[in-house]
Length: 166
Image 1: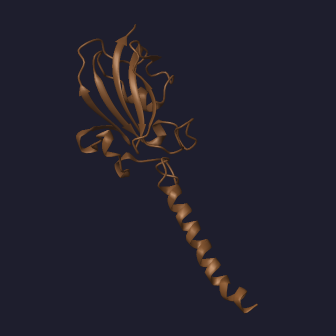
Image 2: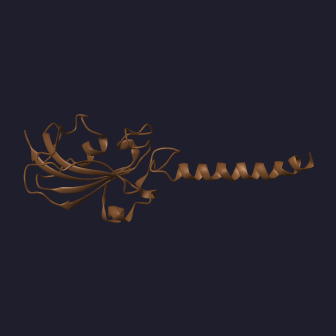
Image 3: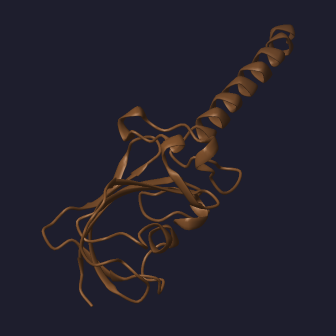
């Protein structure tokens, strides 16, 4: 009987330690920020992504762009049909999507066919241009996430404007 009572504090401490480890694992997950919308300015990025916010232009709160190559063709403006090649990553360096086919991915800019980070971040590019987009979760998939993208995830995209169709 005394042994069982003596072990009770040990069990309690062990349970508390397991809970702390589990909580720490949740807050350091690919989700980025489990407590609310992500903020690239406070995030840590995998070195493999080459993200340096100091070298980027902040075009909106928590949305950054960097031209990797400036194009010389037609300009991406609202209402125009675009063809884009892209690769997307979580801030941890985990790639979640890519379309690097010759024709790329098509959408109309500025009408909500893509996540808001693209509608804002792609505007002004010219055909042949390549750009890096880094944005907080409010411009991506929000608190719910989508497929392999967890809720409140900061997203990193390298995009290339292949064509402006109209």
